[in-house]
Length: 407
Image 1: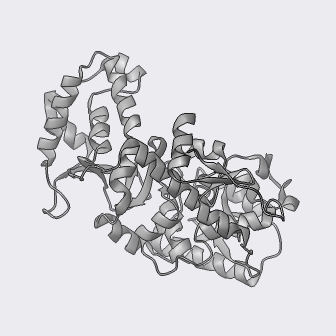
Image 2: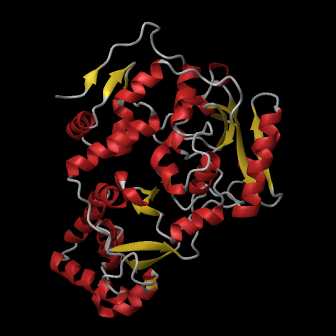
């Protein structure tokens, strides 16, 4: 039986403010995840998108007050880790999800390997190079068997010597200068190796590689897709078919099967878990302010890519420079949020060691207090707040100046 439609309640669709607060609640931004560890936060609220930026750290701090030192210790102990998964994108996720989540990203690694097929690189050559990489790293070193060797790509290439083939100009045109990156992708996709951040931090993109030996997933591909759908609908509290397909990259047939596998029901145009559909009918938005400063790539927005719906109607026309904010699929700056409603924007200015911000209304005591808390967290724990690996103070200076002027 496929996923089932569900009739709307007598009051009709949830109003926008309550829907925003519902998403906020499902994301654990209402204080419900305080005191929980990193793995639990990521399991409950959603994997944290990682592109060499600081979003994973703020994800954990906003929901559970977790500081960088604790998060880094969890990374070192493999309680959380950055892995390629849905859509082939990298996320930071908890240990319980490692094996089955990796299977969701295997297609991206295989696609990279298929590029080499077109460059006349036989699979037997890739298999041989896989074996050589594992031999160099010390294959079979697992969770409790000591510290495996870690080598960065250059060190690996030097150790492997002639095992790595240059693919010349033809390869460069297809984004594959040698055979090594594709092999590293294949080995990482099935948990035989893992990437290790060179300084133990999540907000950069410089890695070494280590042998891993992760136990294979017990879930079939169909079960893994259903499990992701169940998690995704739980993280969002409900999403449209289009939104689920954007996040998962499933085909239409795979999406329908995954919705059925998750037992999803439909209400008000959203697919959701039955328990959430019941809870949502009686959900009441909090009356008091709940202020958070989030990254633009926070799961609250990225999972459904619906930042526009988090603006109140009276803020829909707001512009910063020539950018009309509510028309952007992705926010140009980081948001200041109250119960799911975007009430301002911010960037961190490391030169001034302060948060440059623009509030749409007058600052309240709660807003002022949270600005100070996050400013101190970034200054003391992170030093800067980059959106992605190539972000820098100079590259965002115009944004900082615009926020200062608007504010």
